[in-house]
Image 1: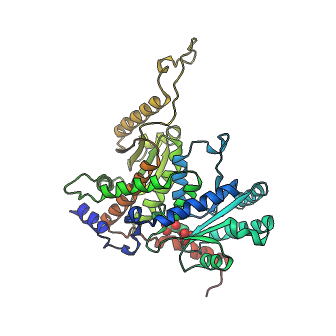
Image 2 (image 1 turned 30 degrees about the vertical axis):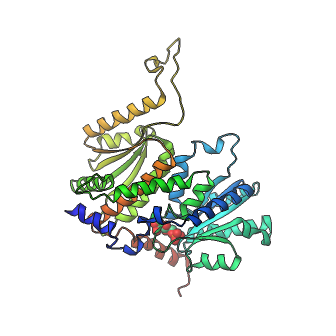
Image 3 (image 1 turned 45 degrees about the vertical axis):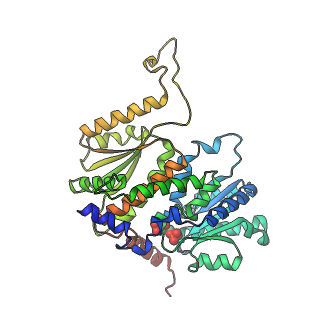
Length: 412
Ligand code: PA5
């Protein structure tokens, strides 16, 4: 059948875009030396920096942002007595006010820059890096800046590679056979993740564990990634072209952004594909909830459901009970959140919005590693079921052509 054929295509790496399937075996083939180097560079940068500016766009920043936010405490930047540097992103848009403010802030802190671009030619990060390089030169002097810059780029091609070699920056390589949105488990994601104090070995072990599961023959054994791909496609073909990723933990908001890019850029081609979008609940139940419940019946939901919080918080009893909340006293806030999730799923189902539920036992590196690999593998299966190449993004060039013409970029 179609699902089995798509699963075999990615399992055997023989489909469209097969030259970009290095991520399939990456959790077990990544060179241990690279992991050691990432950890030691991360320690060095953390010692010399209060802030690390990570420069990159698309697949060059979404994965690390997703993982660090999922695994660091919420409100991390305000937690007292943190010993780790703050991670700030740049070059992921072209806002002048954002970048000018960032440079003003950096006047007051010691910082280092991790610049990430596989092609080494993407406009947004290239501009941000030029600005930051000039700022570093002014602040620390021309001779001191090489120790404050790490580049992650292609082994031999692109402007960032030439600059890196010429200026003698330390660098990591983005493997040739892994595209941006599948690169979170390469140095692209692993260095910023390690800089946030997260155990990257456990993350990779989780991914390796899920890889084994995804290799199960879906005709004979349980394979959650194949099931997810199959259900999505069945819903798509029954008139549900919009998928909403739902979370009930704000730490997962950026995970939704990573997922959106993974599926949107992989599937949205040839006038086909499920439109991926996100809501952050229960916050968005008070904004988008109305539309989801009663608007156009074109949606289904995929709920990321976290079983165990890391901290305890019980709702206290109140003698006066003026807020009428004593019926909740002695319950944990998480229990209330879980009932909100359950109630929402039931209500949406009644509103003809089917939902898929993905349970995450706890937000740990091991489970997030599993989740990353699960989505990557199911995205490849799902894209092959749609008969599109999961690993290219030809449509992204259209805006660039127009923008370059408007900016008068010289043609070679
Ligand atoms: O998934 C992709 O390939 C893209 O989103 C890229 O990651 C993005 O365009 C950035 O490209 P680069 O890393 O070459 O600067």
